[in-house]
Length: 364
Image (cartoon, rainbow, N blue to C red; front, top):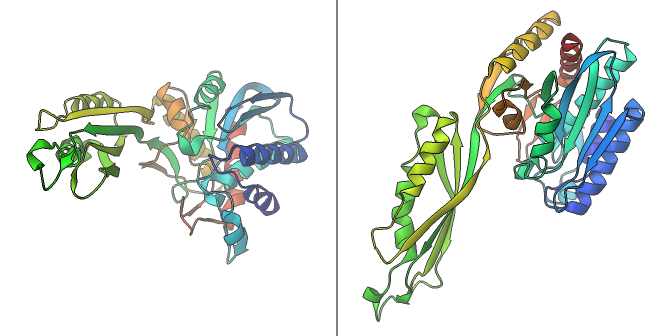
């Protein structure tokens, strides 16, 4: 498994590098065939500028299908591997994308291999690999939703939360504020100007006022730009905003708050635009039952299994919002997602794979 993990990590797959994504997915497909043999069904969806979606179905011994979803793209730019190679030392493996989420991807393949080699009864398994998760899954979302429609369960192989499965995630909204003012010389004719930057400062206070931490809603203004010179009343300014919500009802409230935003100076115009990138992943009844099943499987191994709610989003959000059974965090134990200290604890890889095998067998 470590050899396979090295192979996958060394296939650099930055979300915005289409050529490398294509090469990387080819490598994942070849590795899967090497470990599992030819699939019983194949579907490839051309992602255009985004990474393609690959679906490989392996027929089981009982009725129904389990969807195993993994993304093969990473946040790491092409060339990162040259200065940060895949390494195993002191019981940990490190390298770009090893935690988020190439270890989980390898575990999903080996879970199917284990089921087949041991002759365990199990439903069919559909392995879905998408290459745009780190940028919000704009292309792959409908394919994930379609693939999960008739599934007994959807298992997402994002990294765990310290070993715990992720049964709740926040929804994500990506919004932009555009402010248009009137340019003027800051010294010769200051009254003629209407600074977009000054107005943006007012607007940011209104925007962040929409946060409601007690309800799990946070608002972060992470990008600000504008103006052409320090001696010019700015004619244009923008801000990029990240919104996280735990409750679906908060999406409408935040939208209303943003629609009411305005500048004090009537000469300035303010426009707020954006989309909800992912709905919240809430603990729907089907997913709660699925977690209890996973807990029972883990107990049979003498392995305690907890659940956790996290602020980050994943493709599990899409499935959960449709009321379908989904579990996330079946991947690696480790830490450092999107950081140079990204790593996985090697000793947990076999037990996480066994947990998946047990759960899929139980579902059959």
